[in-house]
Length: 250
Image (cartoon, rainbow, N blue to C red; front, side, top):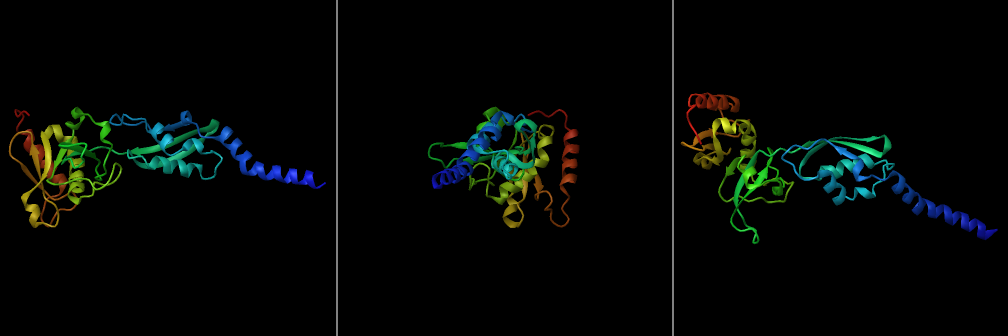
């Protein structure tokens, strides 16, 4: 009677260790084609679902895993284009709906390359938080559609998806986010540091139009000094002055 008992016990143990896992993956595994995410904006050309599915091994995930939604959220949160995973829902038929909030590029940071294989000048795309975005998404033509941040001797301290690592760049990114929608109306080319930054604890910026003299802006929006006009008032004044010069061209 011993052998039949051992076979039954051995088969039970083997099923729970390998068989159940195999069936779980085969019949409840997450399929690439069943993942639906928030429609990506035009500035993102790569297939985020395919990249995340491949790089985070979601093909090995079972949907009956109690932690499946958390693991899916973590996988998509790791992508540099994703600012936040709002929600993950498992739907009937093995479908998964992932609600994403994407990062929006607001400016291009001009740098002198320190990479031995990429000599010369280059640009790094950033969002309003100063997070580095995948540069492969942007052609030279695309680069010219954004405000440029020109601060001497800056270079990112981390890779794509991380913060640029320089508070002056982060401040300029916040300013670019405010001015971006009005870039063409104001004919702005770039954001630079003003000379007064050397004497101020808060970076002071100036705006460089396509033509004409630099325009002093001042502090980062929300960090104005005593007596300094708020960012919204400064912007209204710039737009008002620009409206009085309809004949200007780039």
